[in-house]
Image (cartoon, rainbow, N blue to C red; front, side, top):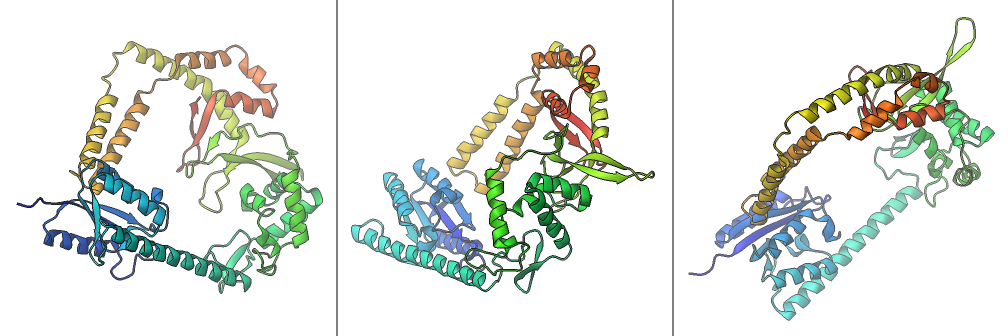
Length: 451
């Protein structure tokens, strides 16, 4: 009785090919499965790379790498693919893969083409075809580049509907966004009186408040040549906000000068975390006119992504400071009490080892082809999350750390704290607190994490 061959099915489709007839992953899978069943092959597993070009380095092809690991375990006799270009278009990576296959007595076969990798002539034909495919990919890349260059030369956008801050796409061309163009023009006008990006950011925050652009957007005004109407070689790409000479001057200044803010440092800089995206809140100053005609300046914090990605809360500094001064010592007492109580209780059975053993067994089953990739990914995600959660729950803080923190808040600490300037207050909180958390629903202070 002839040996039943252990067969692996490999399917691949690039982003551009996903909707072409016969090239979709389901179409390839169906054809290869029918071929394997018709020839009485034992299908070990399916290995897929979706949205990945065969011209790219094999290190980006997760499915292929998983397949080669099973080959190295001597679990596969033959690999089925529909056509050579589904397998490789890169000569270098093909030869590396071929060495691995030969070392483990494994070969590959195309069902729509006739290639024989077992003879010298067959290998020569394969290398010739790979060279042709590789050259075709390179020519396609050059054609795409030429099309993009032509679009830029006639002022058409190459980024779809995306446009940088201050512009919008109309009829496939960049035009000024009338909603924010006055702010940008004001930003440039102010910058060329002080030549300071940081000063300009502070100026915009004070004048426009929540309508002001984020610090990153303002910074890009002086780094992105689109604002001077230029894109690569096209100096008339779109309507400019400043001249090329002004842009070059601003870029040279921002690259060379050391920047120092005119305002005192913010007390909670780099400590308040955005509940939506996880970024640090940044401080800004907002003027408020009083009934008597005077002005009051409020220091607030907000996420830099508030306007271009998501909404969010603004936190006033004096409210935040009052909360921290009042709550931190009380919470520290609770943490020390909890730590002492935990030390007296009988330690729980260590489950980390058993969870890790489950992960190891799952890996072994996957390597032997006893479970498919979908089931493996699902179970692996569940177990790793379970292990992570267990480690977080059982992680005990260092008692010495809490002792040092308690020493910090002993005696007349509050009186000494009030005498600090903003820079030293910021250093004080960073020596105690890892992060300050904001509730995404109520937009109020939720709590904080000790270091």
